[in-house]
Amino acid sequence: MILTKNNKIFLPFFFLILSCTNSTNNNSNYKFESIPDNFITNPTITISKKNIISLKTAADFLIKNESENTRLKGNVIADFFNDLGEHTSVLNADSAIINETDNSFSAYGNVQILSDSGFVLTTKKIYWDRNYNKVISEDSVRFTTEKNDTLYGIGFESDIDLSNWKILKPTGVTYRIN
Image 1 (cartoon, rainbow, N blue to C red):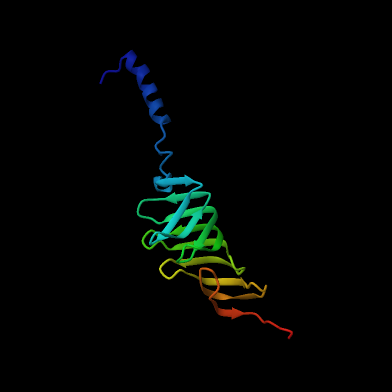
Image 2: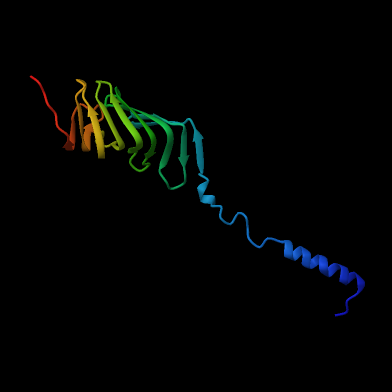
């Protein structure tokens, strides 16, 4: 190959351009899976059974990806209803997941259920079984009755209005003065 004056000027620029290119892709660590298919602010979801509302929930955000359950994030509020459609209790939590197969509901983080009759359940995680209309926790719980008796334990089962409840492993001591 014969180098001419034009080639001598072109070759250094060519090598300079090659040496300045970045061989790594800046987006190589970016995961497109982290972007949800659906992201909705201030959603409200209603779950019904035989045209009677069982659950009505709202949150700051709804995150939904194809073939995944619906996730609710931030200030989750869920109103529960009995088989007659009457309001029975309200749940507050940091986040929740709605299982789209059976419409069950799991709440996480600072979970508190307040029944219309005055019972209060506090825990870290709770599961609502829609088929049996029961709430279940395998975590530590604090349960306050309508008479302000406070009970502690691990594991909890109850109907949604918290009137028929049981603590599976009660802890602590109580003293009553008659």
